Length: 289
Length: 159
Image 1 (cartoon, each protein chain N blue to C red):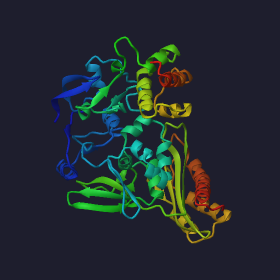
Image 2: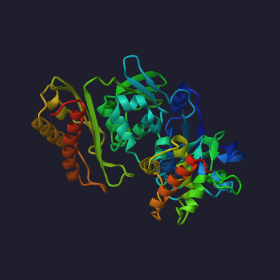
Image 3: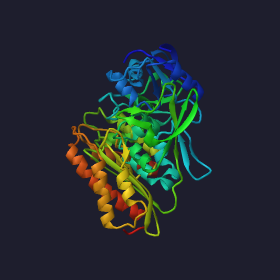
Image 4: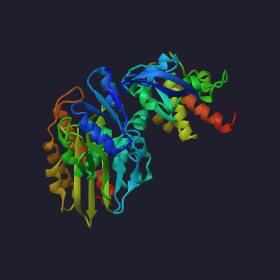
């Protein structure tokens, strides 16, 4: 690892100013589980490392007035996983974190850090897409809140501009009648997913609404299968509708072939996982389907 | 800063050390001749280098030393009281849960963090808790047995 300037801002304002002033090569250190090994291997070079671990309040998980929940950039995966509010209101996020095998990774790593890596294989991001999460992005010129879909521009490319950082995640309230599910396929449980799927669905009098089907590791970014969603929104739930949605979602993937799977296998498994996830979410929403 | 004199609290003992920004906690510990902490993969995947920082299991290979100055660091050397082994250490010895021994310090400290949080885990919870620790000798059954035996022993108040 090359020597770098280690900086410890005490506030978000100081952090964003440093990010802006450091120009080309600043890196934010949160949990460090992605950054430090890659700096050691020389895959990431940083002239400035801005450690945000001591900024007060960034680790909080807070229930908002309207029933939603917000957590900060320093909320560790372990705290989110252990949070009773998250477990009861957003089981899909709990499940996506719980299946991460390394407990050390969860004690150190943060959800926001995981998002900012920008990998399409993020199980955390996939579950947050299904929950309709929005990201709080703070820069030297103020704060903006954008849907998580907008944050991902391309493979490992986020919408962050110079001087900006993600300071938190805003989860909308989970309405009664909402069912969710998270499923993935892995070579071994310590590895990242070959493909992951998270869905959320609200059923009212047998009719679905607010359907969100998120797929990870099957395109340059995590994405929502919009065509599959629109097939289900406003419709009565039948097994034919679920099958059709699963086929449509599969056709919306743009997978690659790599050492974990072939593109063909990923496309096929997208269909299987979307179907199973929809069935599981519908059962949880109290619908027999 | 790129280089500074910092104070570290390791196993209840203060250390004043010149650290550079690029130094990992693992390197710091080895420089201080605290060689109980082992590095195996070096990229945060195997759990060998696990130490406790303010009680939280932490991968020393993936942690900047400077970021943990002034925190309470516990390594395997700080676990026994003189010649008196910690119940977990004793259980590993008694149960033959050590083969080459390279993963053992990380396993024991991870198990300690687990038991500090949940003193009466089920076998399944122990397995999950040690999910981030690899044993290349594949002695997992005895390792889990040893943790369960120490739970039982501590519950009975033998130690």
